[in-house]
Length: 112
Image (cartoon, rainbow, N blue to C red; front, top):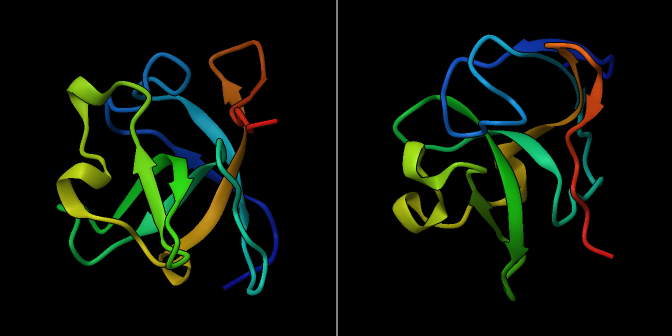
C-alpha cells in the first residue's frame, strides 16, 4: 500500500451530513504501528461487514485494543453494534479532509 494521500468518493448515506453521497475527501494511509484515535473517520476493511470497505467514525477502543465504529447517521448505516469491533489491522486509512462539496472541511472530531 502506498503511503501517499489518496482521494475517496463517498457512496453511502451513513456519514451524512458531513460526508453525503458524492462527497470527495482525502484519505491518509495508516502504516503500522500508527494508531487511529477516537473521533477519527477511517476506511475499514472488515470481514464481518456487508461491504468490503466502509467509512466510519471511531467511537471508542475496547480493553482488547479493538475499535468500535459508528456512523454519523446511524439510521442509515451499519455500526459496530451490527458487525462487532474491528482490529487495528482492518483500519487502512484515516479520512482527513472533505474537499467537495465546498467549503473544504476537516472530518475528524477527536476527543479532548
